[in-house]
Structure formats: C-alpha cells, structure tokens
Image (cartoon, rainbow, N blue to C red; front, side, top):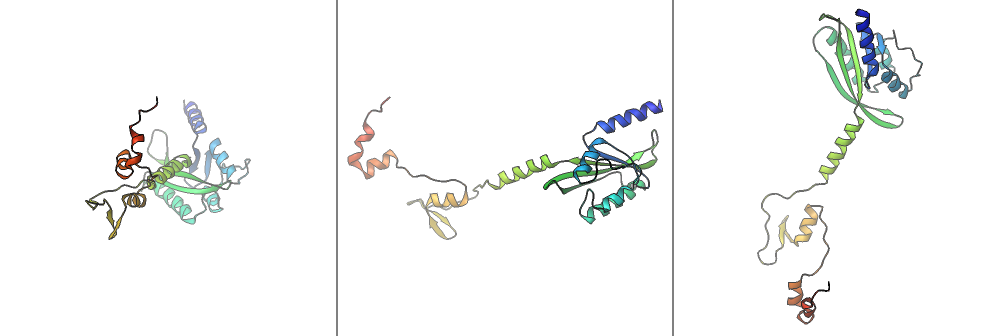
Length: 210
C-alpha cells in the first residue's frame, strides 16, 4: 500500500503544470517534476542537470530563479521558518527575464509532512507562471487610466453656456476635451440654420428623398 501511495503521489506531482521541487530538511532536492526541468532549462540550466541531491539554495545563489538577493534571503528564511513550525506557508510574487521577456511567477513554499503524521520532513517549492494574469491586470489598469469622469458642480454661464475652469471661462467643447477623452466635430443644427441663414432654410423644408 505504501508503494502504491508513493507511486500515486509521484504521478500527481509529475502531472501538474506548476514547477515543483521537493526538498529535505537540509534543503537538498528529493525530486522535481518535468515542468520544473522545462522552467529551469529556459533559465539556461542544462536539461540534463541532475537535480536530485543538490542543495537548492546554492543553486538559487548561483543566479537561478531569482536575480534579486532579497528574494533568495526571503526563500531561505521562509524555508527554515516552515521547518521550525513558525509559519505554515510562504508566498511571494516576482519577475525574471526569460528569453528576453519578463515573466511573472508566484513562489510558494509549503511543509512536506510525514504521511499520516504532522511531523515536517522537508518543504515543497512551487513556481506558478502568472504572466498571463499579470498582463491582463496591466491591460485593465491601462484601460482604467484612459477613463476620465466629471463629478461635482460645474459652473456654467446661463447666457453663453461657457464653463468656468481654473478661473477662466471656456467653451463647453474645450472644457470637455480637456477633462475627458471626447473629441468634437462641428456641424450646424436645423434651428440655427433657420435663425442664422433664413434664406437657405427652405432646403430644410424639402421632403426627404426615400
């Protein structure tokens, strides 16, 4: 039964799309899944690199995964805090350059528990690529930044309909173009044609051609 459980757990880990590395209490790699190997290969680590038995944190310090020393320090600190039971999990978002493109990841560290017991015998490091959601978030923020709204009381002249803006009285179209993303084209309405150009107003009274 134990062998069956071990086989099933390995199959689950190796089937996940997240990049996973399992570490023992000394930080040495017990196993990694195929997604981890693909991710590390894109980080210029040879595809035939033997992960099993190497010290994970030494690899991190050699510039794999994280370029910022602060992230390496956070990872090591969280690993020891999890082993000691001070924290349950650790999660951190970071970016790194892969093939000249910025990719975003969520780094999660969780305790590796002895089956059927609560004793901690290592940690599970998971990397999830969240670049697509980060790009969507960026696009939404970009779209929101293009939206301008007008609120509050706007002083407008009761006669000429100019609007007071920064102590200056501006035409309404100038005010709206300044404070929104609206653009205006100019035309003349039928009532104004009749008022300003009465001799041409007969054109308005012609029956429309169907």
